[in-house]
Image (tube, rainbow, N blue to C red; front, side):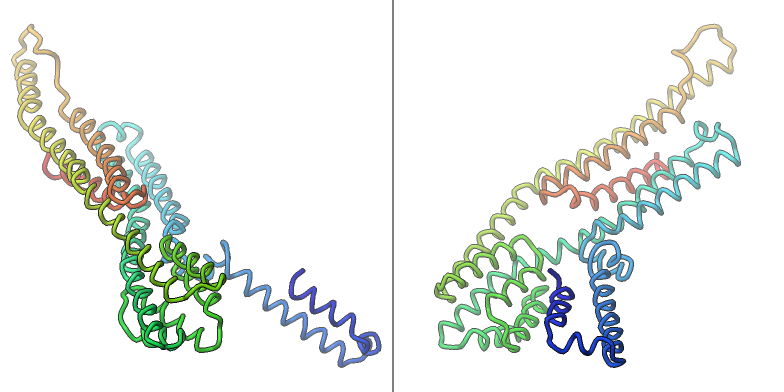
Length: 345
């Protein structure tokens, strides 16, 4: 039962409700009640789901990077379909096979679709890293001050004056809530929900359950600090250990581009010029056929773009354990491949 139903039930049980229902004051109260609840329902509607995205698109995209796809993907599709239609209407279907303009449109459409998500995911990754690095220090400092004889609200108030990176505003909000008399367990649960990182949720859940069970808060905080420190340490060691494989992926991509550049500028160019010379001389002897340098370069360009995109995703999975983390590498590699084939190969 919602708050409105409970309130209506309370009013219906009131002894003066039936006598006052027909009075003008009761009618005015009823209208005011409906207006208030209408505003509450409207506020709730815009605090979640798609309505929240419509009202606060920038805040939602920063908090949840994947929601930027609601904007970037339609824009990319519009550019791709519009560019394809414009080329076909202007030059006919032959333009798809004689120029690289459709390839350029596809590359820019892909970048428009993934670059905003990659940038917001990078920003979120930096925020999470800053929070996970500061969380053990925060728990340890609060535990130390609480051991020295300070009350928990006072200890959190003193700690909130320090600097803990991206965690600082959340600590100050926690201090404000506790100064208003919010119980520690409830305040720390809100803290974990607002911080919204896997490590914070794990640590907060541990602290809340142990505190509710009546454990020593200082010992619980110290245990949470140790757990958070070990978690962050293991994550950093994993990332450092996988760095060599990320370097190998990136270097293999550049080696691929270098080999294609050498092959195109030496062997294929020589073969194409020799074929043209034989054809111009009118000789009846065939020279391995005509080498279409444009076709080969276009096929090589497509293969480089595909390799760059999926190599970037693989680098993200290896380095950070997430496909989305690889989008920034994929976008950079795709752009490098496009520049290499348009201006150097």
